[in-house]
Image (cartoon, rainbow, N blue to C red; front, side):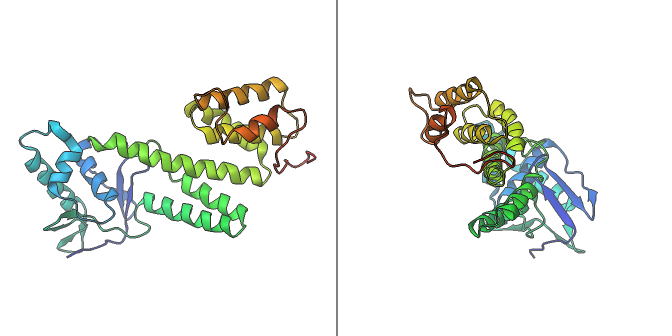
Length: 265
């Protein structure tokens, strides 16, 4: 019987964790956390034991890998009961599945908030969209799948971090539209250090530089433009940076950008 238990919450946007009625559940070893992480990322679809073995060890799987995975699953089924005789983890011919409610996994909540933010932006409500993206980004508690061990972790962590980065870029762009140039400039300054090859961040940095009430020095603009050129690994700026490059360094800016409060357009 497949059961979605009430009062149970999971997290993968940071350490892999679980709570029942507000109390954290001990999920066992890092590899056992890895098994739970794979089930949580499975979206309620059955995951075969062979797939779990491959995602945990790959070609380095020991001869006892299948039995080890079944042991981890047995422990998790006892740790995550549902009702008097059931378990949240369903076992069937296709493998093992963990059905989830829409609010029981932080990743699902994150995706919901991002989707709602994009609908709000499409409807012209940028303030609501920015607020929803802030809610989504606040769900992150560090590197995704922290504490889990397995071959799959690095790839999934990079994929989830890219989702976070895209949502963050969208929120920064909305903040610029709302005239929050000073806040964006301070935030993006650290982001370009962590993501030096992310063209969109360089573009947002230059838009923020133009929008602050006190116009940045020519040398500061030139440095930002040079960084944008470097990102493209070419002798000309990346396509997304080109309008900002010509506009930011010019004596009179040539692109349209909503100015910050107190700065004339």
